[in-house]
Amino acid sequence: MSQTNFDQWLKELDLSFWGTAQHKITPAQFFERKQSEDAVLLDLRSPEEAGYLALPFALHIPIHELPDRWGEIPTDRLVATFCSSATRAVVAWAYLQLHGLENVRILGAHYNDLTAELTPGKVHKRTR
Image 1 (spheres, rainbow, N blue to C red):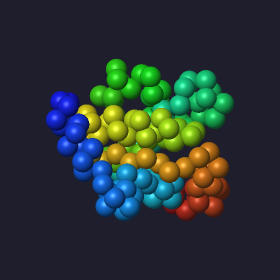
Image 2: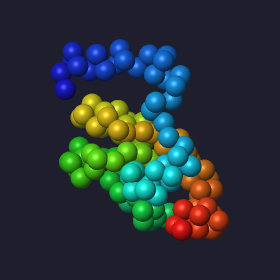
Image 3: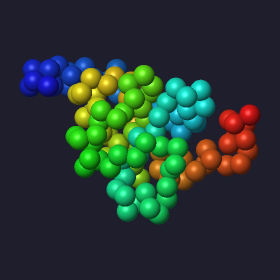
Image 4: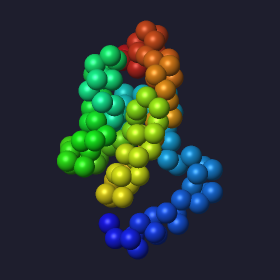
């Protein structure tokens, strides 16, 4: 992307954009979309972090591998970026936006928010 395009992209990120949360998705919204196979979770954590808490339903691409692997990310579904602190999720969101993927959102969640959506009752409801 050229500097001019990057500058234009930044100019579009005004209060209207941030104030309407166009860049985020909640865990509940994500799992609703995932149920209809309309969304994918992009797990940006390191292999070491994923080894402690695996997310088998996610596409796992550590943030440092994203430049070489971003072509693996589906373009026909919503992509929700995730990491344990949101920092890498924000970086990946911007990176993918700048590479032309417009249907990308930051999953506004930490582990406890994510696991709250994975209780037996909620999983049962989604898989019926």
